[in-house]
Structure formats: C-alpha cells, structure tokens
Length: 110
Image 1 (cartoon, rainbow, N blue to C red):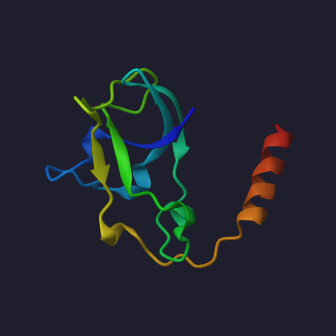
Image 2: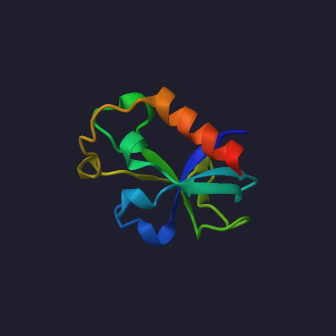
C-alpha cells in the first residue's frame, strides 16, 4: 500500500497548481479510485521549509474527497497537481519523535 498526497480537482487552478496547499489529504489510490482517505496534511511538516524530510510536492487529483472517487489519469499514469513555492513557509524545527509519542498516546486513549 502506498499512501499518496491527494487534492480535489476544485482546488487546482488552470495551470495545474494547488490553490490552497493546506487542503491536501493523504490517501490510498487503487484502480483509478480513492480506496481510503485520511485527514488533511500537517503544514508544519508538509509545507515547512525548515523540515525537508516530508515536503509535499505533487498531488494526485481526485474528483472529490470521498471513498471510490475517481482520480485523474492519463495513458501513462496519474495526473499530478504541483504545489507552488509560495505555499511553503518557515515553521521551524519539528520534533518527530515527540509528535509520534503524542499521536500514539491519543490513539491508545480511544
């Protein structure tokens, strides 16, 4: 399973750029459709000039954010929208270990 960055077609301009980069989600795409979908990206990691480990650059374009929604494909694969340079900001250092522990604690409390 490969988790991808997914953006709704309504959030892509005519030149193929993401309009609002904070409105990108993680998703699994299979057979040209969204198979599973998670929440929106965290700008502190995905759009952070100070944290290059996981910056979002290209996003698969989906008709909408829902399970089994079609994604845009061409003969040789997915159609991607690009994230503009202006979407990246300096958010500072990100402590991945502390974030992971916080996330795990939240998951175990449910």
